Image (cartoon, rainbow, N blue to C red; front, side, top):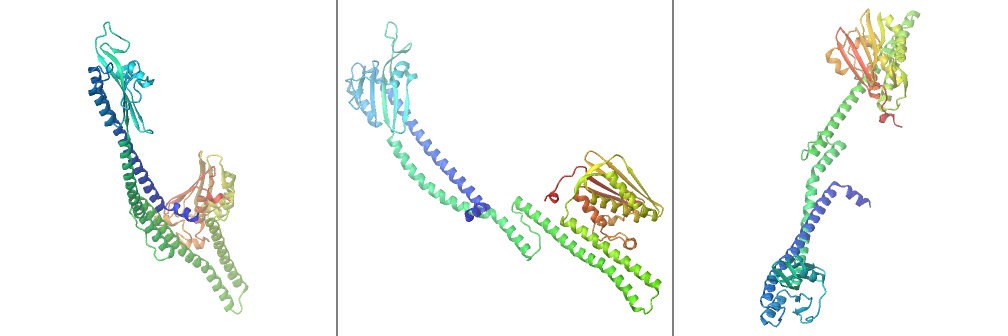
Length: 495
C-alpha cells in the first residue's frame, strides 16, 4: 500500500497515467466509431440497393400481371435471383394479404398478418418500412406493388393517390452475414492495432513523463546540494514557467537565508562587542582600585559609582536582548485586551516628564478623540516609551516633543515628532537594525543600547501594524505608528 501510495503521489506516474489512459480511451473510441460507422454504412448501402431492385421488380410484377397469374417463369426467375443475390427470402403478397409467391416455397397460398405489410398496403410508399435486426442478422424491408390507372369507376379501397393503386406488397428479408463476417475480420485487425497502439502509447507515456519531470528532478538535486552544503549558488531552471517560478522562489529564499546568516554573524559580533565594552570598563576600574594601596574613600566611591553605571548598562543590554529573543521566537503571545490608548499614552508621558524636565525639553500630548483598541498593553507601552524617550534624549536644548493620537474606523495613529538632531539620510534604512546607532558617542553618553527601535518595530509588526519615519538633520524627526483597532489573530496568537 505504501508503494502504491508513493507511486500515485509521483508527478511522473500521474503524467504517465494521464497520457496512457487518454491515448487508450481515444483509440478505443476511434476504433469503435469506425466499426460502428462501417456497419451502419454497409446496412444502408445494402438497403438502398435492395430497395432499388425491389422497385424495378415491383414494376415488372404489375406489367406482367403476376399477382393474378403467378406462373410467369421470367418473373419467378427474377424473384429467385433477388433472393439468391441477398441470401434472403422474398414474399409477394396481394391486397387480400395472401402470399402469392414465397422463394422458400413454404408459405404460398397462406395469409400473412403483419403490421408492416398492412401499413404498406394502406399508405403505399409512405408506409414502406426497413428494419435492421442485428441480433438475428437480417434486414427486413417492404415495398408496395402499385399500379398506375384512373380511378374513375374503379376500385378505390387501395388507392393512395388519384392515379396510384396498391395491388400488393413485396416483403424481403436480407441476410447480413457478409456484413457480420467483415465486422469480425475488422474487429480482429482492430485488436491487433489496439495492441500495437497500447505498446506504443506505453513507451511514449514513459518517455514523455520522464521528459516532463526532468526539470523538476534537476531542481530537486540542486536543492539537495544546497541543503547538504555542497554549494550555495542560485538555481536556474527555465524549462517551464512553473520551474522558473520555483527556481525564483527558492533563490529568493536562499538570498534571505544568506542575509539572515550575515545578520546573525553581525548580531553575534555586535553582542560580543556591546557586552565586552562594559566588562572592559569594569575591569579597568577594578584593576585601578586594586593597583593602589591606600585608596581615598571619595575616589573609591567615584570608582564604584562608575562600576555601577557599567553594570546597569550591561544589565540593560541583556534585558533588551532577552526581549528581542522573546519576540523573535514568539515565546510570548500577545496578551490582547481592550485598552484605553489615551490613558496608556498619558501614563507613559507622566513617567517620562521628569526626564524631559532634566533635558529641558517641552513634552506635550494631543488627542483628536477617545481611542479604545484591542492591543497588548505591555508591548504597546514599550512602543510609546521607546519613541518618546528617544525623542527626548536626542533633542536639542530648549527643544520640544509633541505626541498626537488619532483614529479612523480601522486604525489608530500615534505620531511622535520632535525638534531634535534628526537622522542622516544614509542612516534611515538602518535605524531598525540591532545595535545600530546614528551617533554612537551620544548614544553611549545617554545609555542607549541600540536595540530600542528594533524592539519597537517588532512589537508594532506583532500587532500587524506599521511604523514610518520622516526626518531631516538638525530639523527634527517624526515617527508614525498605525495599529488596527480590532486585532486580527495570526499564527503567533494560536496555541
